[in-house]
Image 1 (cartoon, rainbow, N blue to C red):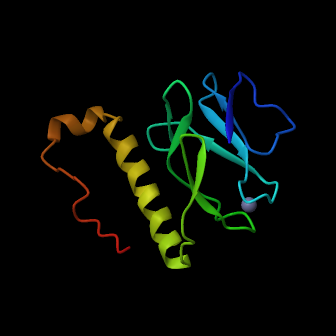
Image 2 (image 1 turned 120 degrees about the horizontal axis):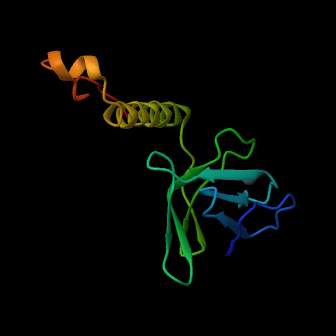
Length: 133
Ligand SMILES: [Zn+2]
C-alpha cells in the first residue's frame, strides 16, 4: 500500500492507498480484500494509533471489518498488509465488549465528578470485571 497525507478524505478512493488526515485524526482506505468497501479508522486514545517513520505508516491495532460482508481482518505495518486470522463470533463479541469497557474506563478517568471527590472512599478500578476471551 501507499499512504497519502491529505486534509480532506477524497470522495473516490483508490485501491491500495491509505488516506491520512491528521487534521481530522482519521485514516480511510478501501478494504484490502478488494471488496471495495470504505474502511474508516479514527485516530484517538481509544481507537487506532498511527505510526509514521518518515517512509511508511503503521496502524495499531489490527483492522477487523466485522461489519462488512467480507469480514476481513488485517494489520497495516510499514505500508504492508499483514493478514490476520478470522475471528470467531465469540471472539468478536469479547473484543467488542473489551473495547467498550476500555472506552468507559478511559472516559471515566478523564471525567472528575466534583461531588465524588469529597466522599471519595468508593474506588472502582475495574478489577471486578472479568472478560473471557
Ligand atoms: Zn473486504
